Image (cartoon, rainbow, N blue to C red; front, top):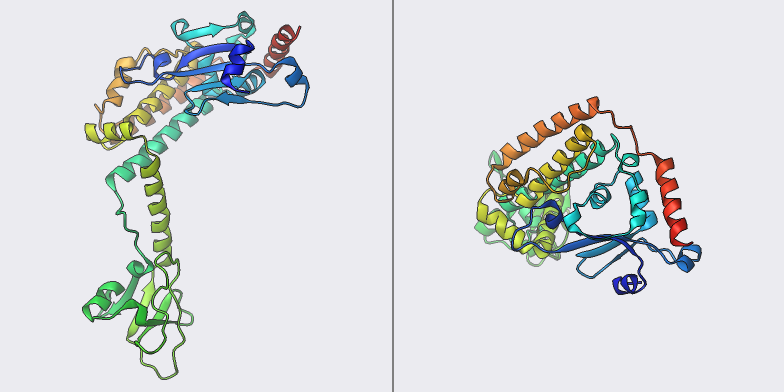
Length: 350
């Protein structure tokens, strides 16, 4: 089933502008995202067919099935709570049947955990991007040789430097593991010895070991920082996967404002914290943001990164205090939600 089928068969119950255009945070270059709710036709619902979501290729049009939506409301999902509280000017269509759903049955103290959980996820993303922006990685990947050190004087030296200074090639080296000394090896050298080198392939994760005849004299002793190389490989993959998939306009904005963090992620961090606090204080969901100017200042890189992190911690503490005093129920009213779902479905399949 696709979006055209949903529309042709009048299966859509709710359709709203979402994202920045619902929040009132849109700018001339903002995308148009639409979210909505549909229901399965009777023969599908009672038959074998199950379908939770329908969306287009770019995911800017996305609809969730009625049962899935109520399940998400039962779990205090912020996306669904926002959808059902979209301001009227951003609602494209809403079935009269959805008036049966009362906000009081799904707003609860659990919103503190779900909204704040999303906020923490945004902070984590912002920190991760900050690390990537400030620590770009060279395209040429390092090898195990870059994590090997040879004992030199009273200290150590990178094995690659040692070999270069002595006009030696890694492929003619032989390594022999030294017993009881993890990742420590005797280093031997010889063009005609048949040694296997430090590594056989550039993508190798381990050093190569060689057979060395008894009596051979070692050039020295080396250590391989295996854990360091493993961490480097993980960071290298994450960095270049990010480069391949990053949102270039957002990255350009990150660079342009010079604060080295994803300002859009940080903006949504504060939006989520503020919305959670408002739910505790007023028992309402303000999707269209009254703090628009402040949030757009964050998006435009007006504040320093560390200042925002400190402010976020303060806001979360304030939010915790509001929930401690809140009269909201502990969790959503599952019985009332289920009764409403049955009522809506009964009307749809009448």
